Image (cartoon, rainbow, N blue to C red; front, side, top):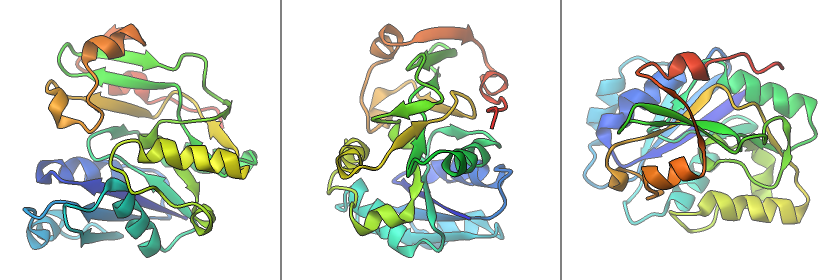
Length: 231
């Protein structure tokens, strides 16, 4: 069983969050949404979600960092495994199944993806980052793909940061002796909008292309991303 935690400051991304949750084939799950903006109306968000099962919504002041929001969500989580979902990315139907299987067959406390796809909306390009870093132990995975044993939080919490909180968290985990495993490149894509200011990580498309490999120009990136992981 797994608790998904996502934090958002943008109401228009609620539908993407719910889509990523409801399309997961893994059944034993809950979704915790943390609204991290004072201008969001929690009651309107609840009504927009309707009768979707297993969803709980909380609101924290917008001066709370992402790290603080994540720690709060983890405290509220019912299950022993935590998955961090970003509000604007794509998580394929097999995403949680792959992650849970990886936790079972490796001795890693944390799994995620260090080789993964990025879809650039500005040019409809599908990019691959971290070539060759799938299916192996690593020192870091993409923060948007973190899946880990909740028991870690007894020793290590997310730092009081909004940028780089996932990196610092993983550094402390490695220092504590926890292993991190990078799963396949499939079942996930980071989505980059045309406006870099939409994102917490304000890196340009040009720089992403320089440090990755364009694998396709397409309107339908999901057909390339959704693949069986082999687990």
